[in-house]
Amino acid sequence: MSDQSDQPARWTQATVYPDMWADPDDDPRNRDGASPDGELATLLDFLADYRLTLRMKCEGLDAEQLARRSVPPSTMSLLGLLRHLVEVERDWRNWISDGDPLPKLYGERDADFNGAIADQTVVDAAYADLEREQAATDAALAEHPDLSERVGKDGIAVRELMVHRIEEYARHCGHADLLRECVDGRVGQ
Image 1 (cartoon, rainbow, N blue to C red):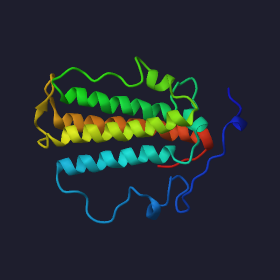
Image 2: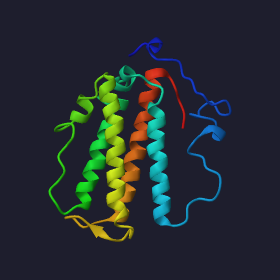
Image 3: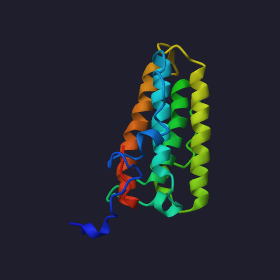
Image 4: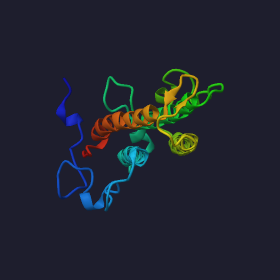
């Protein structure tokens, strides 16, 4: 059993609720006004919020902290999650296309996690790769605004692909919560 003194003290920047990442008035995911109109706009809004949440969970950490596998025996790290989502975004384009699959960027099985080393060059590349791959997948899907349309070799519905994207980010944001808390004790929604 691990010694509790090995764990960082829990903390948050929020002053209103002690279990929140940021105060509601300071949270960039909170917007004034009505929710988006329509199913596609709603799906895109949820996806944007989860993408932002993942970035928030990583901000303020150095390369060593981002690469730290803070929840043993798991091999996950925040940097590994960023790199994994690069590969996932890239793979979603394979689902949309009828052509040959795009090659992996980081190598075969689990290279996205295994190559997540404490090097600022690797961190910078992961952020740049994620931004590029997200934009490319967004652009590819923008060509298919009908959520019922079936795309790619397997004929997957655009709606299913959109929901799967949200699910993937939501799942990994949960992982990021635990990883971040174990890195520096920061907790929150």
